[in-house]
Length: 135
Image (cartoon, rainbow, N blue to C red; front, side, top):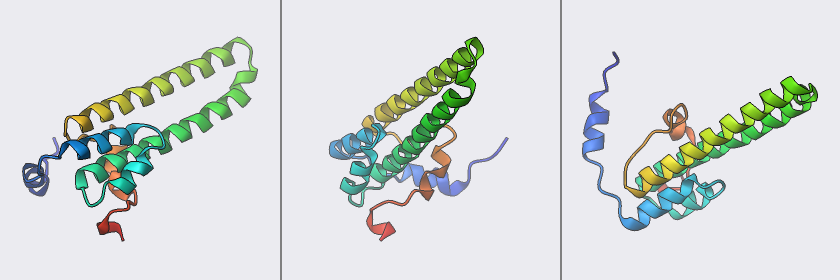
C-alpha cells in the first residue's frame, strides 16, 4: 500500500475555505468550454485554478472521445449489426462517463472540496493557467 507524502497531508490541512464566489466559478469549470472562463476569472485563487485545470482536462478527454467515436463510426460503423452495437455502446458509455465526471466535479467544487478526477486529476498541474504563478 502506497503511503501519502507528509507534505500533501499538511498542505490539505492548511488550505483555506473557499468563498461562495470561488466555489461557483470553480463549479462551472466542469461545463464544457466554460473552464477557460474559470481560468481567466479565478484570479490568484488556487481553488478555482485547481478545478479549472481539471475542467480543461475533462474537455480535452471529451474532445478525444468524440474523435474516437467518429473514427469508430467511419470504420466499425460500416459493419451492419456488429458495428452498430459496438459504436452505440462506446458512445453511450463514454458520454455517460463524461457526464457523471462533470456532475461530480461540479458538485464537489460547489461544496468547496478538492477532488481529483479519476485518471485525469493527477495530471491537472500540467495544464497552464492564467494565474499569477503562471505568468
